[in-house]
Length: 221
Ligand SMILES: *Cc1c(COP(=O)(O)O)cnc(C)c1O
Image (cartoon, rainbow, N blue to C red; front, side, top):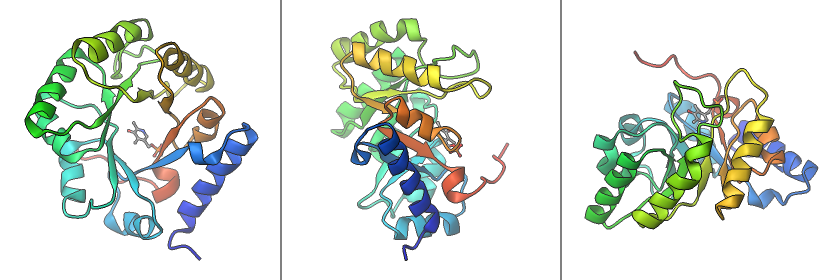
């Protein structure tokens, strides 16, 4: 038996959702969202062979993963402040939350200094929620042009977090449409409650936290 029945169960659900959508399961990666989880919850998932982990804060990720990240892929899935760009470039393999020009410039400068550039996803605020990060859907094409053309930053794909109180399908469909018309084929979408729906709409990576590790500790205030 694997070290983590919970991981086995999520991978089986991903494979079943892929099959139901007529997709090859190997085209969908699991990002295990380890934010706010105790090490005892993460350790068995790591031992079972999971290699990709998602974190939403630079500081917390550094304290959890420094010295342990050999062979792993770390993805930043939370908002990034420009003054943390250098640290993020040093720590993360992927930054999924590029959403404004200032941040693109800071990442460009940090990458030039470090000689290392994380893979980048642009976050789109598909629900146009004022409290949520991400570029507005109507601004996404122009933003992608400026980032890729103007700043010469390669973009790997798009990421979204649909509004909590709406069916997620239309948001996933919108993200897929914006990606397609911009020549992007990677979509980070779907969380514990909706990753199977996201797979039906073309997700290439899903970000699963609580369904894999259990409920998170209350966030520190
Ligand atoms: C916390 C978080 C997740 C994981 O959420 P669960 O519902 O626990 O799976 C996924 N994506 C982002 C951006 C997050 O902040």
